[in-house]
Image (tube, rainbow, N blue to C red):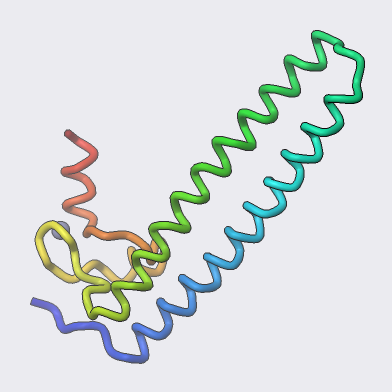
Length: 122
Ligand SMILES: [Zn+2]
């Protein structure tokens, strides 16, 4: 078993998590605003079929982006909770410490590279 994260390391990851969260919630807000203002414009526009088509694709894209990012925000919240409870940095599956490089890249991850690989093979 590798040793647990130090307080300093934990704080470092917390900072990254909070920073990413702020970034993401900022993006979500701007997508939300763009989405609702576009919806308003469409009401007043005279129904051009071609325009409506590309419009809805753009909206679908914005929505899936939004969904994806809300997902990450949830994972970040979860990870922040784990920094409080002391479970952060530990693989949920095998309980081994998660590699630091991995935590730096995806600090909200819940499992180690090995378990992730196994999960993806399923
Ligand atoms: Zn694992």
